[in-house]
Length: 63
Image 1 (cartoon, rainbow, N blue to C red):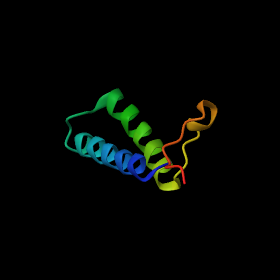
Image 2 (image 1 turned 90 degrees about the horizontal axis):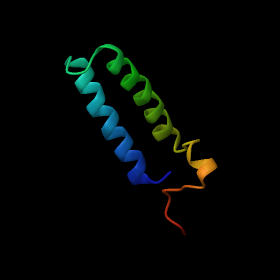
Image 3 (image 1 turned 45 degrees about the vertical axis):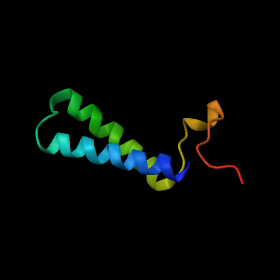
């Protein structure tokens, strides 16, 4: 997973958290977004996205 991909995921998670905790998004949608945010944050921190493997997708620069 490339640096830009990781940064974008962290930024999106931050926006979702702000929207959730300011009660802009709530209910079932809020819960689903929090779950997806947790998974996205975890993959950003680990630098590996398991969904990229079956599709042969990579955001890393080729050396």
